[in-house]
Length: 241
Image (cartoon, rainbow, N blue to C red; front, side, top):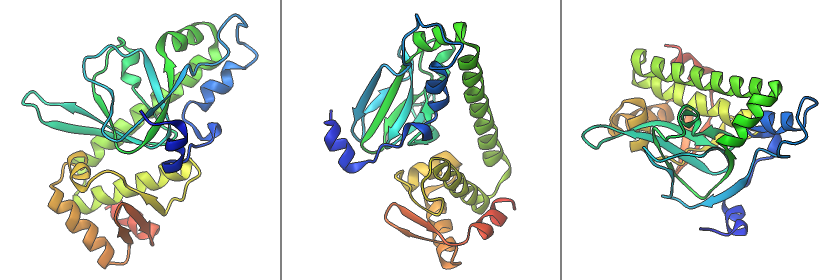
């Protein structure tokens, strides 16, 4: 486990107002809150290093998590032991929401780089949802966004060709980074090309070819893990087919 000082050297924590659970934290201090409830829904912060598992399939899960800095990939295991990546999660985003149903992990979450997460215990969240309408409404909004994200992924895998898939993938990260007050045109994609291909339903070689084609066309440049998008408008045009 890394020290907090070491973590801060390699990843800069986002501000609380840019975090996916800010709405929950804000409502905890709202006017309809029972003063006998805990003063905060965040009970712990954990520092993890690359390769650590935050949770495993089938384990009892007692919290949802907000990424304060770093990134995590989630995936499920097929019956024959293969991995299917279901998401990449960046600073300010939530993961582990499926455990709300029965307190059990339905996927695995692996850390891609030095990462800090805030833990929100499910029992504390449930207590607030039962007693505070404003907190319950925030949870509904969070779950609704999760449904929309899953719908977008189904459309991505079912209807788009390779160029459209990668363009949509890059634009998605652009929007997500902008939402957290990062640059929408220059950001790191810490995951491997193989992982991107797994997520998008494409061969790694196809991912590399499309990246090269986008660079040759002047849409973007890459340097190691960093992507610089030069023409968001053209990328959007490609994504729309």
